[in-house]
Image 1: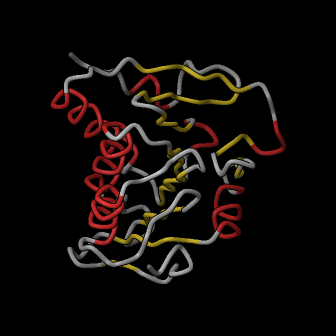
Image 2 (image 1 turned 30 degrees about the horizontal axis):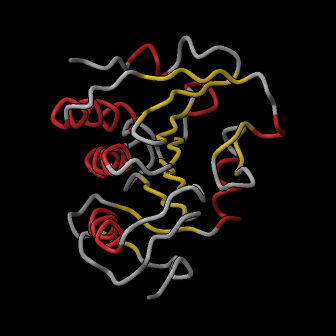
Length: 191
């Protein structure tokens, strides 16, 4: 087991997939660009503890195929960013098979690297303004939704658009002030 200390693992196997594990400090620095930070439990929070955020639960079908299509829409929407952070909070506890599957999603193979609770996954665009790979966002969102684990998803546009939390099989949209607007306007679950 290599653990999260292996933050230099990077994949470019498909030609446009730029994914790596980053340290907590790197996550704090990147999230600070969009007025976000890491919470004590390694969730994503509005910087400086601003409590005027609004959580809106998105009703997603329990049917796997419908949930997958919703995650595909989410991935397409968030891929229009220069970077995306998937922050795994300390509430997640992966079985060995879930850990191997997560490693395959992130690195395109079972890398032997445990992606543990508290890990931060950074997905970047191959060039500025180019957008990130939507399929890895989709696959990670679907993984956390189906296995009822916990993560947060923030992008280079989260300061104005908001961000998402996935917890216990539910997806939440989180935005400073009101949850109306931002990414919420462009995303609605379909049956």
